[in-house]
Length: 382
Figure 1 (cartoon, rainbow, N blue to C red):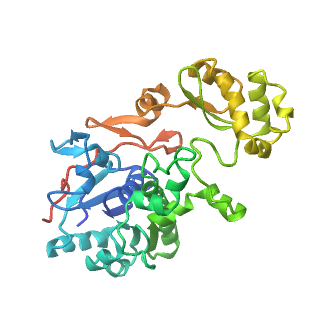
Figure 2 (cartoon, rainbow, N blue to C red; figure 1 turned 180 degrees about the vertical axis):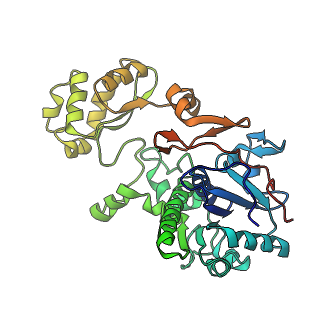
Figure 3 (spheres, helix red, strand yellow; figure 1 turned 120 degrees about the vertical axis):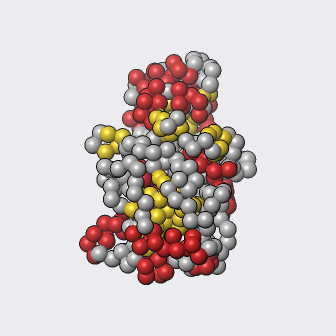
């Protein structure tokens, strides 16, 4: 039986029941987005240990039940309830099957062979509940030679090209600072689930949503993919520079770095006026973006010679006053010290800090209903 929520939701997805059979990041991130939007999410975890990210620390803190939990788990599991169930046991599978009969959505991120072995595949779950939408998040998909390979974010960043285009120019590729493959797959899963719910409202039937980390990663190559597919050149790491727009990167100042993005000729004219370089837009090396891309090194040298004459804060003020997109290069601590960001994106619930959803509906931010749950707090099937 579906456990009764302790806190009622009034969000746009209120009444939608989500059975979260996922672990680590992509699936839990997707279900947290749905929970933030008001869905009633029940997370099934292994008894005794729970989601692996409960132990992925340091740092650690104490949850509302007094248990030690890693910060990683707290990043993607709020507004949910936890049920402990051993999926290898009859009792655990019976519990999950019972939940599936009452759910609207099930999110699974086991490898395809494990999904079949545990009876969590779409055919099995939809025999129990034909209206159920089953969202499957895997490393590599279910219908190709990579299907049963284990897949973490680092692996798909490597295989999907991100390592080859990220990092200092001329140096080895590096991964992004957050798990962009996992997070991208999670967001795509949310989009697919919402589309499937919309379709079910018209047809009355459930369906399947399939997302692979590798597919999501490749889709996020975006303009870099098209640079290769159309232009034929194999992109490489460029530091903070942009392959198609100049100037669009970070610059050193007298006391730190700033980020500056000039996306039009009009903005370039304004930048040149600000720097007292009114003749630059008429220089054939810099007339139009294509010319600036071809001569990016020369332009960067000219611009940075100006930026090094004053502190970063002064340049940010002057550039913003001229209507030019720019900002300081913040550390994470500086991000959360920014009063605008802190007011919009930070809150606490039961003493646990949370970075809020960026979604605002009708001008209101999405509410925190409950902190990331203690293991098995909503039930334990052993």
